[in-house]
Length: 453
Image 1 (cartoon, rainbow, N blue to C red):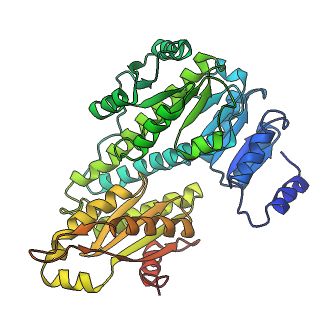
Image 2 (spheres, helix red, strand yellow):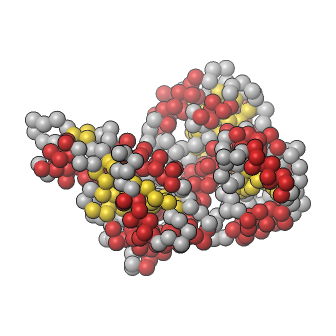
Image 3 (cartoon, helix red, strand yellow):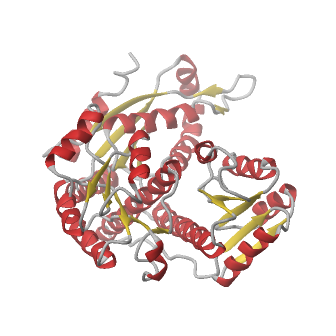
């Protein structure tokens, strides 16, 4: 592990940074040094351990979110198991880098790459892995909450059929080789030679991933990726850009456009295919987790008009989530959204039109939250959110975003009257050490409207 003096140096470079988020385990900076610098610049603060024993000690000292591991370390595979055991019951995503990962036990690491990725790519993949880990933790907590009330949740069963991958682009020999490599890994590959056929397929059937060929002209691939990001059903389907060569385009720009991965044709097809398969499996697992969490809406314990948690169920579950956050050393925040008494809302309330709109509003809240978040209806026009692994400022951003999206929707106000919009007053509180869930919910409720004044 870096010496204490080394850790102080990291903090002097980033004096305003919070505690580190990512543990890097590497004997030296030769393989992952530039990646660490790039992640630090993107806000993913790293701390480095030079041995697996040091890595275990760092995980005891800090509640880090994920691990980047140099696979050349001796006993690296056993080290992965030891690190995960150290942080249990918190789930620990692992990105392993190095040629040795080709011989690793399948599934041991969440991501295996022969070379260090671009920092923007690593940040995107780490974010997805961390959110999936938190969602899986939430599944177990929600299962316990519903089981305690005699309404067991459906299990998060992952579909067992072959992974479905859309391959969009002209039949170049490199692209065909990649398609063959995907097929060899058991994928059902559907070829789409044009953006039009690609969108037809995407709307006709579900896919676990889409690989887009960026040959002489990147425009078709960029068009397909942009269209996927504008569609709520396709938004989370990972899109991979397959380039003819490296260095053809600004990688950071591509990741900002929403690509989950970018691979060059000079990368072995087998490795690129393995990366696509890993993304597809992660997406399928994400879909299974969301389906399991959403199954709660069909139980008799949720609000019948919105499918959200009732006040009583939310209080019970929040207590369990708070205890889980304490055990896993993760932050937890609560947000409260109250319909603002604007002139339009007062008028709609008098005519009963607000009551007609509230079930739709509650349904919108449930669709806008992340997979791992819990939404509840505390009263007719007051909603609450439990946001695991989220600090207070980030929770406010999430709650404000939900409020902003809903405020863009016009609701029926009756014949001969203009539609009305609904605005929210938002309150947020982060759980403090030793604080009870009831108290943090009270603080969030007391904070409603404070930031708007």
